[in-house]
Image 1 (cartoon, helix red, strand yellow):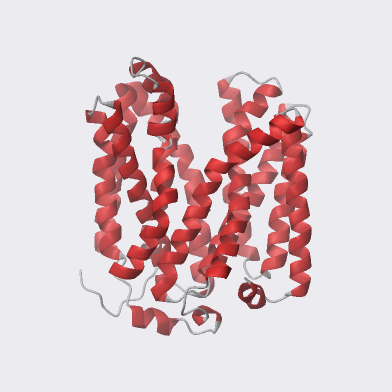
Image 2 (tube, rainbow, N blue to C red):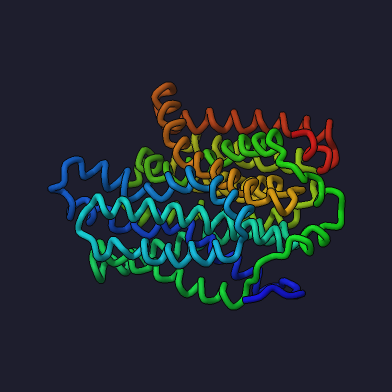
Length: 404
């Protein structure tokens, strides 16, 4: 498909937004059938480790490892064909376990899924930055968080339905969804033109970085890591905390978790209205909500209060994640934009792994999960104070951007 003097609009935005749903497929689609996988491969030595650490989390490991490379590939070889290739390969390696009986081959296929995920996430995000500018770009980027959060609920449901119908192999058929998206991307999306993209960046901030700003990007990635740990703490520890508060019914745990999940897209919608707030003040608001949420969760004596605390926390996470993504991509020239997005995706993925370790260590030191959440709340509030001070010192978004 040849490039032409076309103006990107809503169809292009949607087709670059929907691939983000593939990023939550890795773990979410298999959540309902983990017990079936463990049962099927029980005769394999160390099958618990291989199923949980291999089949379930292997894609996330490769998102972490390969995202920076995916960004470099997008800058070096172009965006569209790389995206289409990754989406097609993703479908075939994703469905492969449905036809395999060797656990080790399944793990290899899951590693390939992670590589494809890293490319799809990095390139689709980069192309949103290529196609759109200013506030329109920021709205599309921010929407990724809401779409990923909401799609996870649907994917878990569909994975459960397919698992009930076809056993542990059933959820893997959902990966064919990528082929449908690839066809739509083929017809609706074109390769961004470098000259036109740079020319469209009219304001100084859009053209600020022609060379890769390592210090700035690494600084933002460090803050993204903190935000990611906060986000995944609620995702991974909600069930454990609710059990500690006396909730043992899985259906009831699911309902309380749903309350928290609603907070993420709500936070993203709030971000749309706050996008022009200077970055220091915006980070202050984000981490105040995260910190208050953790404090309520850790001090809760009943599950309802805990659920509302997790909701407040996830509103803050729904705000902070698009804040970081938009900040990371703002000002990067076309030729380095893919690398910036790739590094951001890697930082976000690292948080998924570190969250479990951080919370476990704090729980051991503080004699329980709930006290650990209180400590994390105090740390988030302390960072909010630092961000507010930064907002006073650097009142303009551009000044904050240059400082890192």
